[in-house]
Image (cartoon, rainbow, N blue to C red; front, side):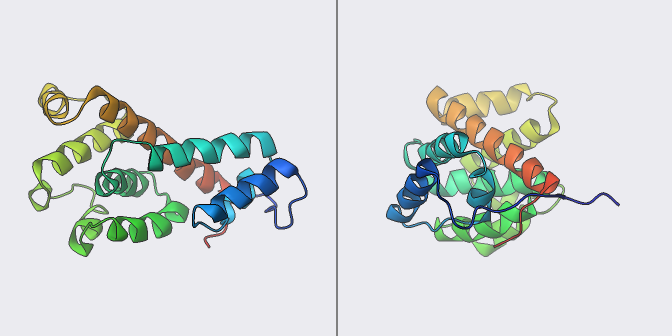
Amino acid sequence: MPTKLPIALVEHPSDTKVLDTFARLEANGARPVNIHRTVAQSPAIFEKFVAFAWSLRLESELKPAERELAIVRVLELSRGEYELKHHRRMAGAAGLSREKIAALSSKSVDLNLFDAREAAILKMVDAFASGDGIDDATQGDLKTMFSDRQIVELGLTLALYFGLAHFTNLLDVPVD
């Protein structure tokens, strides 16, 4: 069985970009966690990585509950165990019920538990994760319910968390 590639966590940063980025995280109410301490191995990229992730969270037109719905579902589909612990909690804080969060782990989600916007998001997530494109009906629903900006922000959010799941499945990033 394959194992994860060990990578040292940056515990005591000396690089100013890492120190500044850790300080910005803390100023926004977040403590640096192990994904941060891993990506901080590359200080310039770490700074931009955090800026991108925070932009998706704080500057997006998506409702926080809709964003977290998409994130948890794409993490479930890509086995993103590191990120799931954090984002299940964030999904609950954003207003998703425990029943909805639990339903996202099913191979085939019961869309009857979700409203029309949430169901459209889940169909988009499943299409994204499969890599097979998106059917006409779902395209129509998305274009009716979401602006192009929101669709792009949703797609970028999926890309980030799908990639992060694979990143933490490859590298040994301990769950906080």
